[in-house]
Image (tube, rainbow, N blue to C red; front, side, top):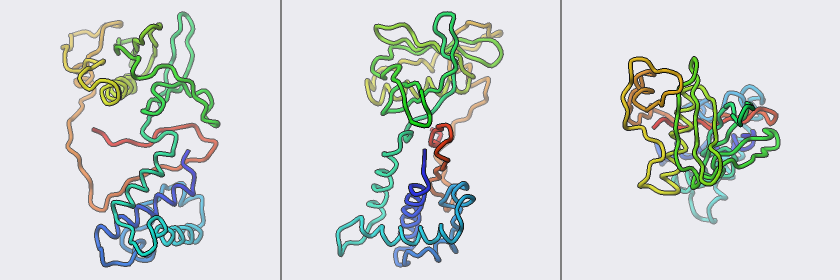
Amino acid sequence: ELKYDVALRLAALQMYILTISTKQSQKVSLKYIEKEWGLETFLPPMVLQSMKEKNVKKALSHILKANQNLVPPGKKLSALQAKVHYLKFLSDLRLYGGRVFKAMLVQGEKHSEVTLLVGPRYGISHVINAKTHLVSLLADFSHVNKIEMFSEEENNVRVELNVLDVKPIILLMESTDAMNLACLTAGYYRLLVDSRRSIFNMAHGKRTANNEAGSIIRYSEYKTKHNTHNLEWNYPPKSSCYVRAKKEDAQPSSIRESKQ
């Protein structure tokens, strides 16, 4: 859903933040930024491939100058203020802070392929039309009582979201997506509903010799099977926040989130 003008505006703010954070005395100019870091550090490949280079530079130069209008006359835009405006632009994007999953929705004997959007602004929603961003709420985080996962054939997992006062939401998903959806939902529940309660138990349960279909999957089993590792935050030198742009007729996808 990220349009080119928004991608350019975000890139210009990134350029400004990085320049004044590394060299406060340096004038923020596109020529200096391109020489020091390169435009590809700030812009998604699709923008660079779809737009002429001179048009990209012209637009970025204009936005870099216009950034000063974000503060009152006579004031200089600080790095912190630029970061706040960056987040404001991101918050207007429909998928910011959310993630999209492909799944099979099970309703009795009926199996339907669905696209799910999970995020703080939309709870657990069904994406009905990707082009018009039409979604239908399946469950609010406050109504999810418990999350269970059961092994199925091959690499698939059955996810059961127990929702208050209605039938459970049953999904068939690839195991990695299933674990991500369960952890994301449980995390938002603790963040937005009750920080003291966990609706998805990841800490207990031991891996059995044969994980038969229909058995409950615990986090310890997933960790053993997928060889996961706990990593500390790691930012490489000259790093910046990358946001992928996409064409308007493309299917929705999530903004990439940092692994925690």
